[in-house]
Length: 429
Ligand SMILES: NC(=O)c1ccc[n+]([C@@H]2O[C@H](COP(=O)([O-])OP(=O)(O)OC[C@H]3O[C@@H](n4cnc5c(N)ncnc54)[C@H](O)[C@@H]3O)[C@@H](O)[C@H]2O)c1
Image: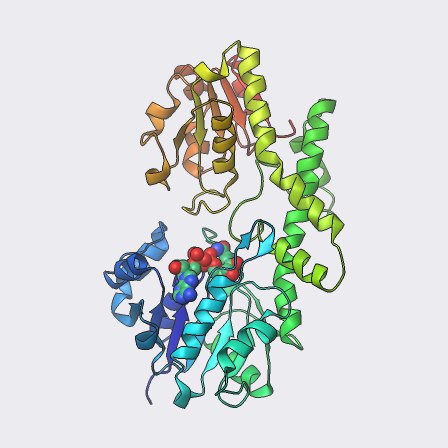
């Protein structure tokens, strides 16, 4: 029997691992991406994402995935089309342009004879698949449920997480019609080693994803607000949260930091807020959470200024070093990263910081960690890459004549650093 053909549209943090998994599971895989550089790299067996596991797999499976920037070539013969394009926010408004553009390409080069299954994995607000995707694909010629089968299965991948990976994270799924449900469930059963929970309709599945990420945003905003108030009360919030975590029920810890970044948690609440607003409901709580999290880079800058004042150093003459540019540790994704916002705010105050991130060397103005840290007036841990935590010991900081440390991720040895007579400021400590 001929192998089924899967076309993955969008080969980024979500689409590339999916394409690789489908190839491992015996599908013929075609990848469509509008970024020609990405396509060329994948075709050469090189991962466009800096991640050891992805790098290994792209090399190994290069002959099993044909990546292309041509929608015509990629969509031809596809039995299953999975859309994994970005769904960012522009300001605080959902920006569906990449999704609409992808749907238009699919509609234009539709593999009509195949009656394909079309799954949207991108995160969207409730109603997008039915009211935005479906009419674009149908156009004047096609009918969902007859010429193609429409489904939504929001992706939950957590890049860099070695325990919870694409194949073992349980998923929610919904389809427009029973046949779409049967075909979609068969597909995900074949590639995943996890439960797939079927919801009654597309809108519920869409809502699950935005609710999950909004839940995180709100809880992080709660501890970020506590951090600011506990700093004024002189109570170490990290210790409080560790204490509260000893309760075996009814409490789960979230940790304060320099703000919320990435393509998901910092964006998805806007999708829910906007969709509810359209129906006449204003999410005050969700908006406030966004505001609090967005205010954290400014808080980090105020701590930097405070440390320089305490050390008697003029900000414009100070060597301020921002370590980590990605939005979370051990990944190369800088989208919406609070570190970048900290740098922008510092520049507005006339400070030209040194920046270093081993995962994002092209964006770093210091290529060497050692040179960046040496003789720094203030070292800011904006992102806690594992190698930073290992290297930034109190002895190392002292040896390198560092005057102050802003531990924006609360990961360093606070007492040890203070003992070495280096100024220490954490978030909420
Ligand atoms: N990054 C994550 O951790 C994560 C986790 C779960 C869900 N999601 C969701 O998955 C979706 C994809 O996110 P991502 O992080 O993989 O984005 P990404 O930017 O890493 O990848 C998307 C890819 O789509 C390509 N693209 C954009 N428009 C296109 C078009 N019209 N046709 C073909 N290709 C196009 C881009 O060039 C890019 O390579 C988003 O909806 C996001 O919210 C992301």
